[in-house]
Image (tube, rainbow, N blue to C red; front, side, top):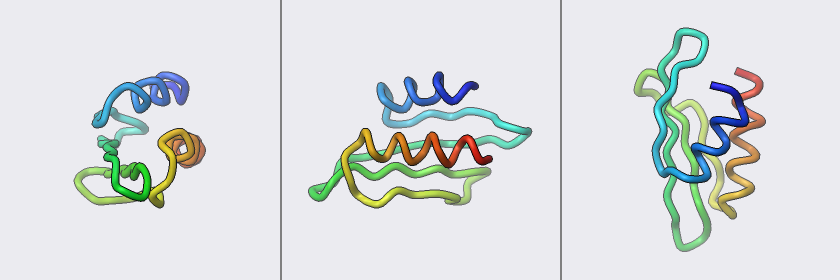
Length: 69
């Protein structure tokens, strides 16, 4: 999945599964009172999580992290 495809999926969904370099990932997010939180799990282990902030900022940080995987 390209970074652009993943970005569009994260924008429209609250949970996405995908494979990348032989690993299975789960991205999920939710709204809190102090902002949106986005998390990435690999094989059931949390590997990245944003601080509560606007959803757009979370997604940009995630795409930056994804490009380094």
